[in-house]
Length: 320
Image (cartoon, rainbow, N blue to C red):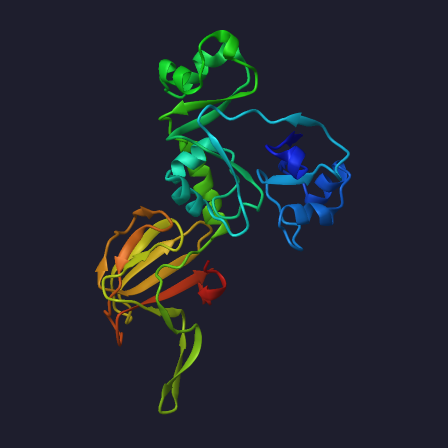
């Protein structure tokens, strides 16, 4: 269903949420618009890649199919922000002085924290809380109880003075309610989008592959080396379970190994201090060790390896 966005009459577009199994071509055909025009309206370049939950702009001047209906007004005190080229959610929360949890609470159906298309309209809340849709006004009390909200606070926040203020499909703001489900879903989406993140930022000093050690000798380097000051935090490149945390007798010094979904492993070597133990589950981005120069090392750095099906592969092609 195509919903009229704020400013759509002036800007000439509506918005549609991508459903599971839908393709860009199918949406373009439904609204009788060219795929190229749909890509251009959403800043997709030459890509047809869309995901369930993505919100697409559909130029109304060209779209002739589907049903157009007015989008519900936001709760009192909310502002709107249309995501511009190059803008990120981290920049948005800094600009408006809110937390990422507050932004997610106001927009619980966000499809991603990192890969939203230009033109997506965001609701900017006055504070922490969760925005929900009231489909049936007679179920307001049950809805408030389900989320553990305070009825009087909800009434004040939404300007509700009598049952006549309630309308089917209206948006309600539940102050203080954390969007836990949305945050957990978006964390899973982020990890899928960024399967492996950099475990430390620094100077890349050695690449994966064969390297010359001088005097006619060489060996195969099974990972990458990133130089950083001693004590710099090392984070988990991906969520998983710690399978080794201790001293390695193979030259790695203090080593952490993490097993991920599907069986892949990441290795973090030469640490000065280990912050995790065997059997512990760590989240992507969680601190697991500190940079050091233990084992066979010529200076403080992280030696990072990625093993898939028991074989070390070049991690540079996987890191985001």
